[in-house]
Length: 168
Image (cartoon, rainbow, N blue to C red; front, side):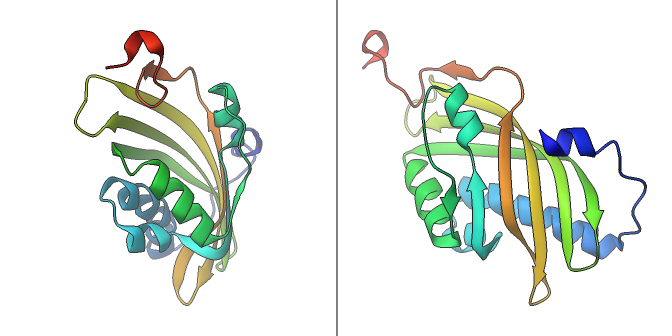
């Protein structure tokens, strides 16, 4: 993945602490918006024309999807897909690898747990590498492009993909 390869090339960037915090907060809004089922918080993480690319992870899970384009499409797709699930997202190791005061590129890890609401005996646990491009819009950092790549193998206990031998 580009971010994983390029993060070693960056030197210490002079990023004001308030910008670093605000850049990372866009990722926190993305995760917390899902976990809290808060559409406004979730949407606040993205620019109007943002893209979210989950295609590599989906392919590893045996599913073919398109890149989600536009804040409304991203919100509708993600939030409707997770509407029957309890989720927890943990975002860690954020590293800004490019910054000019108006645009930034970020590398981070995200772990996402998905449990069917009402049946936590089944789950899907993913750990992904994030490659994120952000910009400052009206004083707030927002995600313009977010790309996921799976790190390791998913831990699946028949959460989201029912099989005949696990149907209840």
